Length: 117
Length: 116
Image (cartoon, rainbow over all chains, first blue to last red; front, side):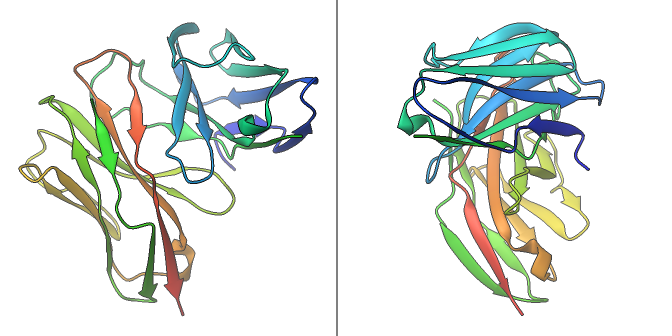
């Protein structure tokens, strides 16, 4: 069982819906991340939270809204999405904060497969 | 700008043989780290191996080894004695330590299929 749990694993939504993706880790990690994985594209970093503070927004459209209420939970709120937003959304966490040097190994969840109709 | 390039979209290997997955990177920084991840069809990204830019020896983890050639800016993954369970997508990634964003930049990935 992975240390990072993502729910739901699959989500189908219309363009006018509002839904949320949830990520949970009980590894005691200090940083959490959202990545987007589209077909035939490298993983794209979306957001980074370092000790619950957002430190990176990689030019993500405002229809994606992250929330990190505590160091163990990360949400991605979705509203008025477009069909091109269909992708696998991966959550990850790391023990070290993002400004720490050294091997900062990310532990990933299994992803939430999103389909926007 | 940092970039990771994996030029092999797909690779085949016979079970029990060794296979090398290529990765080249581009950075102007002196301090960086290189990672390899495996992604089975289940979707989860699994960390395999890490190499720091100042590490003098090539990293090894069980059947995985990283062939690090700094001057050529390459960090190829070698999998020895391939197993059927090694069939997956493999991603090379780089982290820049000179900045503070902690960004991990990924390559496009290589799909490996192990034949029985």
